[in-house]
Image (cartoon, rainbow, N blue to C red; front, top):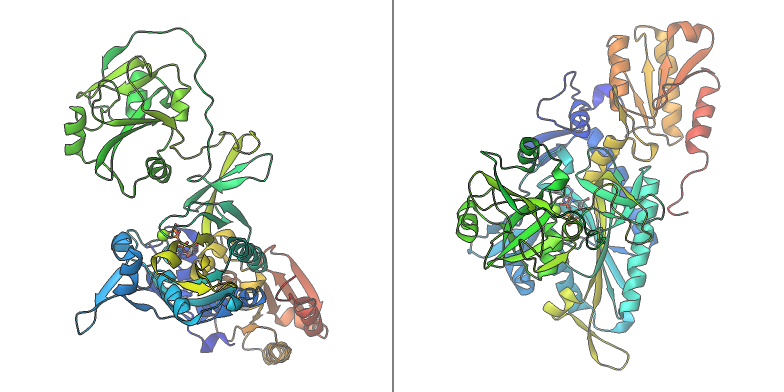
Length: 574
Ligand code: ATP
Ligand code: MG
């Protein structure tokens, strides 16, 4: 490919709309352009990267025995009403009506459509196991589309669905996908980790997320410093250390805290640490009031609370409700004297001998509040996110927290969808049974962003070879020199013939501009052809990642690059 023929609208300046590096570099390198919030055009270079990701995903899915299909993006409401998700999915579902006023949605995921297909077409246990996948555009009306391709409203996903006769078989299908995902992310050249995850809106019994490790990741990963336990901070199970040793007890004491509402404000005002505070958050849980107590420096985990209470809806209570339930304004809520509200406290609150709590009164807090003495706790349970230093639920060693970007998710669904949609097959005895299902997603377009988050420097993108739009970027420095241009063309056509993805810088630009753009675009190798070196019979290869430069004899460079790039080729599976 020639630079002059491709639409690569690079930008010199950082676009102001981009908050994270991958978004910035994707815009600057001319890979994508925004159409509307969370909706993007893929330009030629961006599409090349995307195709490479898709190719690896396809090869490994096929190798694992999955079959590719293509399901519609436009889906009738009836299917979603069958599973109850027409309501449950809420505003994230993009809904529309056809000319007859029938309701449809643009698929955010395809459990309903695939279960409908399989219940019609698969009748016998002999046709199982079955795993069907597709690579397709998904639609989700995210509350906050952001970070470019990272959280789009229209994005590309690979989704696979497995159907088995027995739970044992379903576990095997799950394991195959789990293994295939490891191969995929290894082949993509990404540093990643599989972690235990929550099952969210899709539901089901067990699940793992695949996280690309990156500082800017939206997800927190708690991992053990000793054993191989790793989980999303939302999922990591935390154990309590029981009640505190009996120590000095102080009487409850009310203090004035004028205008101090947040943990930070109160702690600073009273000159204590946030660990000495107990914060009280009031929720509406399926329309009943619940107070959740966590230590001042901890975060309530709504997923754990929901699971604990067995409710499907949990909302932070509005100011008016808080006043009605506690008698005080929001910001000053606490458990002392609270009536008709269920109180759940985190296990770490149980280990505190006393705490500072809101007094349910404007501008006031209590010091030395003791659970059991000054207020009652309905139950102590694990209701918060893990933090660094929490103990591993498997081996008890301290855990650390890393940031990650979720690029894949595997779920054991069980019979959740087959039961609600009455999807059955006949087993060997001729009895009707529900399919046991699994579903498996990969954020194909998000991977492009995640790869850049992990692979860049101050000059631009540093593509991992497997997904680089080009392996070699040829830069003839003096484009007015015939000798330079003939050599560049010769090397270019030889490498193309050998099947290497080459990019020829054929614009008449200053050398500095060419070098900067080459660094920005991020091909793993740059081949510089300059008059001076050429006179001595050399060209120069630069390794984009290390910046290392190497002079190579011009007569040998073609063979060298072919050997380097086509040497041992990665096969679909190791
Ligand atoms: P998140 O928690 O990030 O919203 P999710 O749990 O909703 O993700 P899944 O339903 O498991 O995501 O979708 C499978 C994969 O699709 C995710 O692992 C992620 O890589 C990708 N994905 C999900 N939502 C988006 C989005 N809005 N934009 C781009 N990729 C997405
Ligand atoms: Mg989501």
